[in-house]
Image 1 (cartoon, helix red, strand yellow):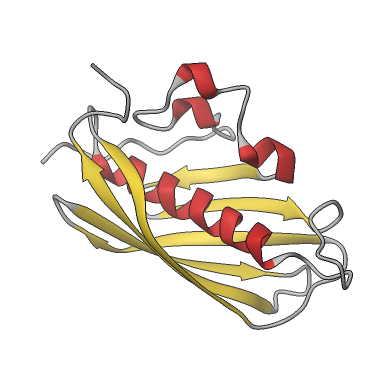
Image 2 (cartoon, rainbow, N blue to C red):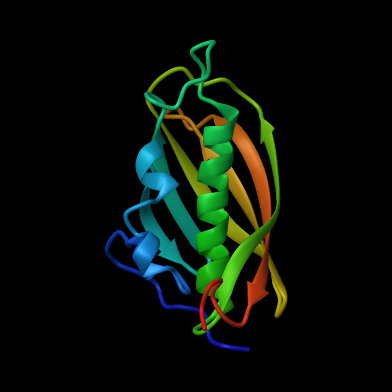
Length: 151
């Protein structure tokens, strides 16, 4: 199995995710949601997301925004653990929304719970600015030898 990708000191660019398609760099959902990855290494990936602009009709953070944040974090966690020349693609995502958020910023932290040759699973905890858990998610990614679309 390939060695995991090394830790990144500076906030990483999503174009640096192993197997990322450079042609999709300016079309990221993360940009539309305001997701900012602040830290990544094989054991921990952290990102923030503003609540403003990501609301559902009742004025609460949209559950789909939570899911997108969770999938972003879990996919990066899987990608850095997959190793060079391999890509992680989401297979299954589960989210439990514990607490409504109306304003501020949420922070997500992903940690790997299983790193295998064919799948990698990450737990993702999303909290509000008062460090209260707002969402718990688990993402399983399948590991491919080549990035999707690669020749």
